[in-house]
Image (cartoon, rainbow, N blue to C red; front, top):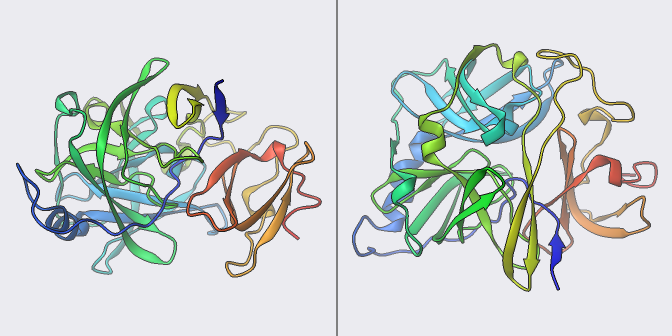
Length: 320
C-alpha cells in the first residue's frame, strides 16, 4: 500500500557531524568548519520591515554574489544578509532566477567574501558522503552529514536525495562533497517517518536564467514537493506548483480567502499548542510559523517540521 506523506519544505534537524578523516577527501569536520564562513543567513522582510521568512545562502564570488532558494526570497521587499563573522549587508538586486527549480542568484552589498567552488552534480554517485551547512532558529550555523542515495525524478525535475538531515532555516544552504565542492542546494523535504532530504543539483544553478530585477519583483510562485511512500521507501515525488501573483511582478494581492503572513502568529517556543484542521484532525505542536502560503508545524517531541497549505487549517480555533 502506498502512503502519501506530507511534504516538508526545507525543514531541518540539528545533528552533530562526524569527526576524523574520510577516505578520498577532506574530513567532514574540516569541511564544515572551514567552509562555514562562506555561508550566510538570509532574512527576508515584508513591506513594513517585518520578517516573512529566513533561510541560508552561500557566496559564489568575492564581489558579494550569493545563491539561495527562490522560496526564501519570494514575496519579500527587502532581505538582510548576515555572515558568521557578524558582517551584515542586504540584497541589492536579483541577477538570475528560475522559480521552476527554486533557485535564485542575487548581488549583495558585501564584498571580499570567501566563495565556494561548484562541483558537477552529474558525477555524483550513490553512497558519496556529503556535508550540509545551513542555519537554524537560535543558531548561527547547523551542520549535518550524510550520504547520497541518488538522483530522483520529480516530473521534469531532478532532485538529489541525501540522508543529511535538514532544519528550518537551511533552505538555500550548500550541500558539499568531500572535496569541499557544492553539489546541491538544500531545497526539499523530510518524510515524517524517516529522514529523507532533497537538494537541487548544482548544475541547475550553473545554467540559471538571467533575470535582473528588484527583489520586490521576484515571482511569488515556487514548487513544493510531496512524497508517496511504500513503507520507508520513497516511490514517487510529486511537484506542487505555487500560484503566481495575481497581478504579475510586484503585486501584493493574494488569492481570495488567504490571510497575510503576519496574521498568523507563532506559538511561544516553550509552550506547545493544538492546531485544528478543517477536516477535524488535531495536532499538538511545539512550534508553528508561516512562509508564504505554507504553515510549518513542528509536531510535539519531533525534530522536523511539516508543511501544510494554510487553507487546511482552522485559524479561528488554532494559534490562540
